[in-house]
Amino acid sequence: MKHLLKKGWRPTLVIILLLILWEIAGHLFDIPAWLLPVPTQVWQEVIHGWTHYSGHILSTIRLTLTGYAIGVIVGLAVAIVLFRLPVLQEALYPLLILSQNIPIIVLAPLLVIWFGFGMLPKVIIIVLVCFFPITIAALDGLRQTDRDLLHYMKMTGATNRQIFWKLQWPYALPSLFSGLKIAATYSVMGAVISEWLGANKGIGVYMTLASSSFKTDRVFVAILLIMILSLTFFAVIAWIEKWLFRWQRQGGNSSNG
Amino acid sequence: MGKLQLQQISKSHGNHHVLKDVSFHVDEGEFVTIVGPSGSGKSTLFQLIGGLYPPDHGEIILDGNTLNNSRGHISYMPQNPSLFPWRTILQNVLLSSEIAGQKDTAIALELIDKAGLGGYEQAYPHQLSGGMKQRVAFIRSLNSPQSIICLDEPFSALDEFTRFEMQEWLLAIWEQYRKSIVFITHNIEEALYLSDRILILSDKPASICKEISVPFPRPRTEDMLLSEPFMQLKREIHDELRGR
Image (cartoon, rainbow over all chains, first blue to last red; front, side):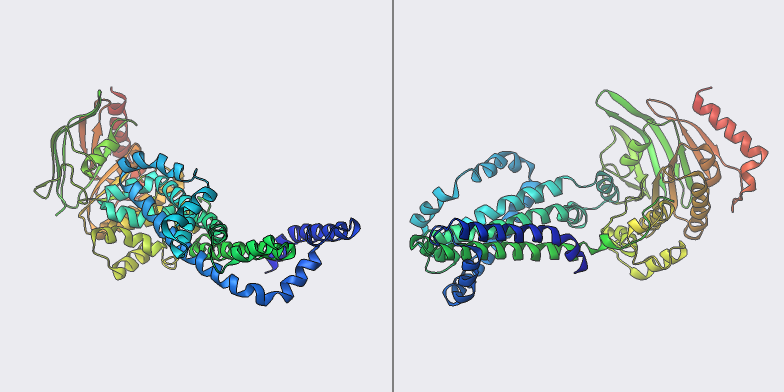
């Protein structure tokens, strides 16, 4: 906690300063609220509009978690298969990268045409944005296995399965976690975008409704909610990572004496 | 158990002739050291014994079974400790037996204790000094069911004092367990101090150009290092390696 306070005060101060500047500028230039509400107005909406958006949050969280979970499974499966079968990796790697070049905004309506307005097209979108960073990170981690350790495993007669689960997999974990963290923030974005397409609930819906009726303060509430969700999700993954790698923090001398 | 035989082993990497007609044997419970100039194919020899790839000619036989290109029959200690950083010392020592499918925590704990590492069972490798890491690596290779251990220049990265300490320690532990050992080094003194027999490899393509039986009785002492016969043997091996 102390650590957080020590490191966190600078960015917090900057954010507060920016908000104050925004507030002053809003009043000074007399900007109408439908164009750009000042922070205090947005805050009013956050407090009084709870009943308007609380249902939407839950729906978005559920969608995000579902998409993320499936994205992680798909991402890991693809990484492991490509790693174990180098021929497939050569053949499919360009395709993987191409899959990320299709603009989601274009793809999303198509998915709705194919799969309707249910959960499925939305989950597909989240999976599409999530699996890529996970696959790439996991593949990189698996490829970078320490050569000496690998040599040791081979000399000792470890089977390929043992080499994978005892060496390559744990060795890839730190790299994999960077992918998981990136994917966590992407998944919230993916969920909101997929809700724009047509859903009856979700922050995306709340946002479109707000902007089409010029309730700009609510748009900002939506932005705030997305930020909080992304940050929380990221923090949870980072915390799991820290817990898993707690052995690194055990003190002691690392000298070669 | 633990009788290793190499018969006329040859191996080339592409056009590069590495080993030519290498034949030797290691008896049960014997400590055999291979010395040779660096880059003379010592590591290739180990990789062949370890079964990473087959020899071009010849046979590798352990206790009557041909080992060519078959893994898992030897236990191994590499040049650097190669401990797994996310495993505790105990888990690291258990690794070799896990791979062989015969995990026994009690034996591992006893080995750790005998190695003078009691109290470090739950520590992680980054908390240990270089010499301690090598001890862990050695008892890891002891803690597996294979009857023969291959040590690949295990002390070459240690400083002089730690190295001598480790040699003494290695002998003390080995004399309790008496597994067959094949030891690779380029340090002549180390070879003489530790082994029963020394095989000298010639330069490329490597073959065994001389075999020396070390006459000193066990347990070996530090005084031995300064005795006249020791010096003489040392000179003899040195000359042999220099090609005189």
